Image (cartoon, each protein chain N blue to C red):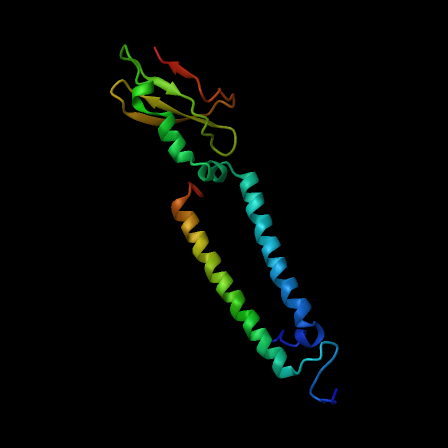
Length: 51
Length: 113
């Protein structure tokens, strides 16, 4: 395996790859959060939650 | 984005599934605890409102003889007070909340003189 000075161990990703992956993780978390907020609004409106 | 360097330490093939599983398990646990600790969610999921209407079809409980009927339909407020529905001779209904802690069986109807 040719030696790549940019790879960082123990995971072996480069910093650029790590940041790219993390951007997707953050975006996914935001989508999850948005869906959760929507679900709570629907629950508040359509169920006896909070009277 | 200051946590991005975690992926230099944690392999994504391990970290990503672990992260998603943790979110799923956490979300599942919250749903279970809400289902266990509230009265409204189990009733809502089992069609509480529909059951309440069905159990209360006016023809079934409209009192004769000009008195009101109280139906303890088992719908209970969170905490101790119990709810019931008063059915007037003309078929109109009203929901009442009893302060007395004693819980009366939800299916009986008591005729008010």
